Each structure stands twice: as structure tokens, then as C-alpha cells.
Amino acid sequence: MLTKDIQEKFPFVSVVSYGGAEYVGIVCNQDQYITTMIVYEGLHSEKHKEQLLELGEIWWWESNRMIPINIFLRNEITDLKYAMMTMNSKDVRVVIGPTVNLNNLTLKRVKRKSVQLIRKDKN
Image (cartoon, rainbow, N blue to C red; front, top):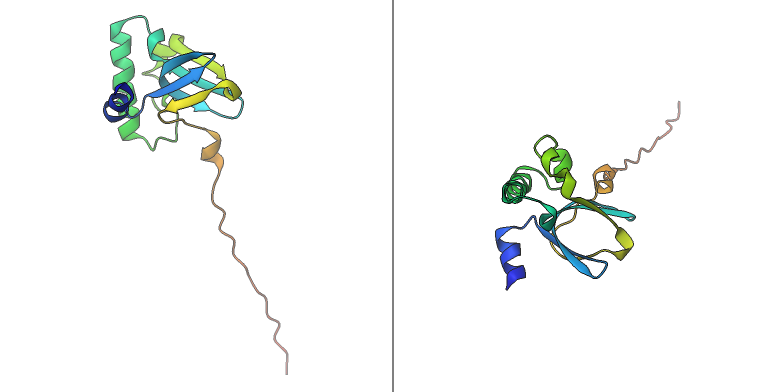
């Protein structure tokens, strides 16, 4: 019931299992080595919790969702950096929610063109 509510109302929020505990927040970046997340429970005040949800909504609806929230809203999120948690990716299991990987931005589809040269006879 609770996970369904999170998915419907806050599609940008992820639930991550790490070290026997579950963390709720927004995943900033996840690659093969490190997962970085702004943890909702780590925020000290209600104002900061509301700010994270508002910024998450802006990021979710106004970006292409491939750029991490801490890069897309760099100036707005500086107050919340104290709640950022870094985890070892091999021990992280994403229960629900989206993850962002900066390495996916660099992958481009390469269109290959084949050019065939034909030699004409002078006759």
C-alpha cells in the first residue's frame, strides 16, 4: 500500500536497501561502483523535506530524467547536500523507483555509413 502511494504521488522517489536498512530518497547517480542518494530521513527540518519533494517534482517533470537532480538543480539543492549518502553499489538493491547513471549520457548511437567506391574504366 505504501509503495503504491510512493510510486503514484512521488514517481521520482526511490527506495533502496543497503546494509540491512531501507533508505527513501532521490538517487543522484548510480554507476557500477558507487550509488549517491539524498536520503529523506536524513533531512533535519520539515522545510528541507518539503524542499526536496518540490525540487524532485521540478526535476521529474522539467528534465529528461537522465541528468542527475544535483546537476540539473545545482544551486537550489545546495542546502540539502548534508543529507547526501554514498553507498557501495554492489551492496545496493533498488526496491522501487528510478535511478540515474551519468555514463548513459555519454553513450550515443553511432550511425554507420558504408561508402562504396566504384572505379570507372577510361574506355
